[in-house]
Length: 262
Image (cartoon, rainbow, N blue to C red; front, top):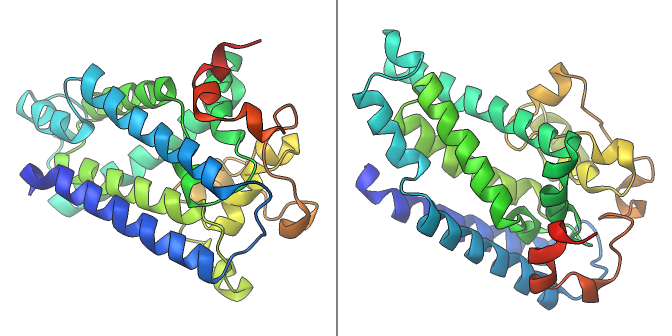
C-alpha cells in the first residue's frame, strides 16, 4: 500500500479540495471580502512552494520514516506487543495531540508566531486558507512530526492515515460552508468543524488564541482552550490580523518575506 503513498495523498487532497470548493460555491457561510482570485493564487502558490521545499530539503517523508523506525526498534510502541488496530489508533490520536500542542506553541512563542501569522493574515476564510503556511513553518512541523514518530515508534499505517486525515479535515474545517446548527453541535463532538475553527481566525486576540485543534476537538475542551462561538457572531466577526488589512500587501512574494519584516 505504501508504494502508493503519493497517489493516495494527492488523490485525497485534490478530491477533498474540489468537493469543498463546490460546497462553498453552493452554500457559502459568509460573503467574501476580497478578491478570491488573488487569495487563491497566493494560497495555492504557497502549498506548491511548501511541497517543493519538503521534497528538496528533507530526504524522507513522515510515512517513509516510519518503517525505518520500526526496523531499528525505536520508540515506545515498538517495545509493546499491541494489536495492530490498537497501535494504529493510538498512533493517530497521539500525533493529533502533538499537532495541537505544536499549534499552541506557534501562537505562544514570538519567533514561531512570526512564521505562523502568515496563515492568519488571510482576510477571508475558505478551503484554501488551510494551505496557507510559510514553508519554514512546514519544515519545522515536519521535523517535529518525524521526531515524534521516532520517539514513539508510530507505525507507517498510522502515519499515513493521520497525514490523510490532517490534510482532509483541515480543508473541511477551514471551508466557508454552511452547516445546519443542529448538525454542527453533534459533529463538533467528534471532529473540528468550520464553525468551531473559524473562531480561531478572528482578529480578537482571545478568540485567536483558542480552538487550536485540527482534527479532534477534545484537546481544546480538555486543556481549556475551547471557545464555542465568536462574540460578534459568525457573520459579524472579522477574519485575519489587525495590522494586516491591505490585500496589496498580502501577495505571495510578500507573504514569503513577511516573517522577516519589522
